[in-house]
Length: 166
Image (cartoon, rainbow, N blue to C red):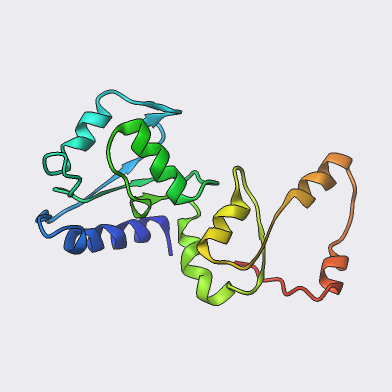
């Protein structure tokens, strides 16, 4: 599932289910980096603008919205908490769609397969929080490149690990 499809599905869900007072016929998807935040700093009046999307600070959505980013490496729950603190609004983990969020839809197929998580941040933690059971980070690859060692992965395969490309 693509990032765009995930966002459309979530906005459709919130439009009907986020609160009995949510009557909006549309939703908003905000990019995070460079639009809402620059690093750890809110851009312009983004906190005030986001507050207007709620009913009188009750944290019930008037207009459903979510945040999109190509970035990641952090669980959605942590990113939502951090953004809530920075922006002064209640943000749910389900309102944060990151580059790796669509991997959650692969859980049923690969839950018990061996997963090598790569990328910046904490990809192993992210995949584990999605429910994948056999996750390791690619620190092995970083170590190999650091020492300039050429090596095959035969010893992993000989350990009878099932590799899946997702």
